[in-house]
Length: 128
Image 1: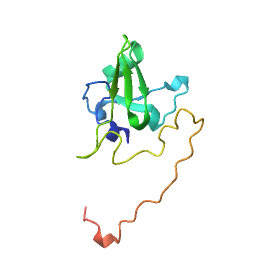
Image 2: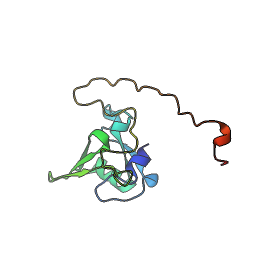
Image 3: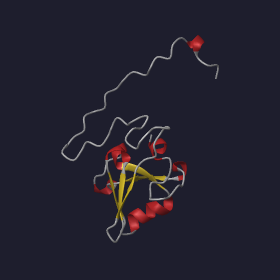
Image 4: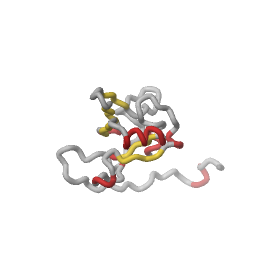
């Protein structure tokens, strides 16, 4: 899901493909950050190092939007790429079951499990 959502490194202006990136916990795992969609994003190796070893900081908002703050205090917003010709950053084709619980919530509810869609009889399936 994250590779599809992020498409590329999520540092401002970087277009290193997500397939070449590392997953990063926005809130570090060592400080209680969960390995959940709302706390993960893709960074290339160089920008992963920048996030952890410089004064740049990042906050993740709903829908995977990242807010980067420079050492001097200037902020930049990075939205996930739209998916489709008329999509906006908040109108993506799919969403994870574990969206961020929100600032006032202490717990997430378990995602509802839906059965997979029925594709019809096997004879109507493509031969691949």
